[in-house]
Image 1 (spheres, rainbow, N blue to C red):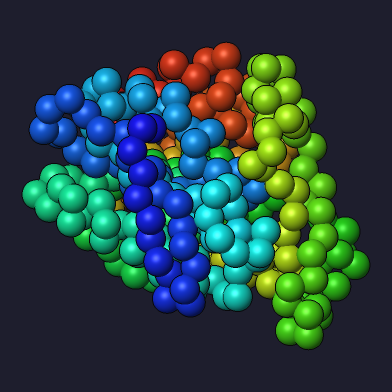
Image 2 (cartoon, rainbow, N blue to C red):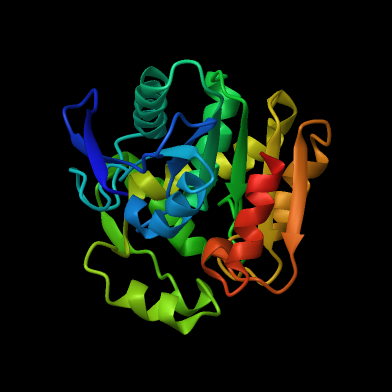
Length: 271
């Protein structure tokens, strides 16, 4: 990703944006949203893969992430995140007004894009959703959930560590080591952020029948972070529009697994 742009949010934060241009007029455009604690440039190899297939790429570091402004791991409410995505989508649409747009979200980004599709009804050709945060693969301690809900109303900026086990990201230890030593990733999440995203997952499952665009939904069956069973439930609620692909034995970041080229080719073939 060698060019960048800025998006100004409605509450005056500057968000860092990235593109991966193609050498000729592209055939399509991907609008990508990353997961919790990470940032857009961790997908540079994915963006390069698609640019070589003549598909343009637009992404941002979400508020409180990467090179964007905002308290680390915080959002005032869920709507702010959806509005930020809406602005990114608009920027991509204005750059290539006559091309099909494919949304691509991973983990929390999948949570956000599913809700964006359900609540905002964007004009897009389809979406690729990988390892979405619909439910966690484990039950968080009840006291932690209760504390989060209480403090979200009283102290919305109260920050806790996410507790992410980075070894669960990928079976490729180089990916894990790079993540552990990356100064732009963080393990922070505020009460408001946790409650908003945690409750938006079940909402997406409950309202899956409102999705009316083609979606490729992919999840690794050995994901110890987000639940592939929740992805199955979402897909079973809307078999008309959602195509489910489970990757046997893959961890959370299927695009960073040893089988990543197979994963990326599956995305491209679906498009």
